[in-house]
Image 1 (cartoon, rainbow, N blue to C red):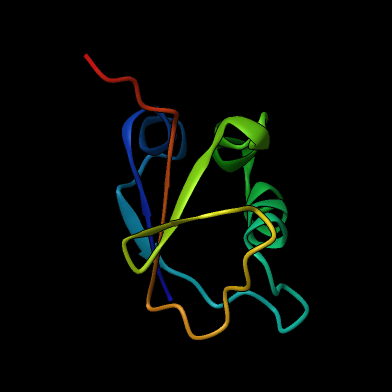
Image 2 (cartoon, one colour):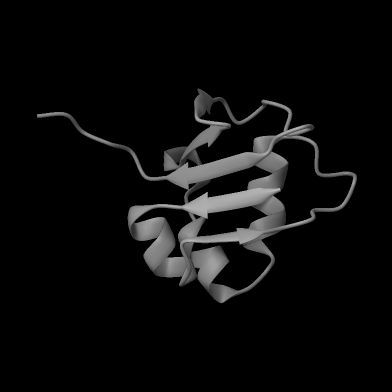
Length: 83
């Protein structure tokens, strides 16, 4: 699946997007975040406070317990403010 990173999440990881193949036991957004966190220091820094990270699967905002099976694209970004 393609994973995209935005704003300071992208800056901390050091890339805008990548294709990943998480293990079969990674089934939800929160499990994907935990798996990504273990992929290196930049990931650990980007996801150090997973509760503030927002996620979209195929351009639809989702909750941490949402299943990732069948996702073509998952995007991670910090909270947004309006103005």
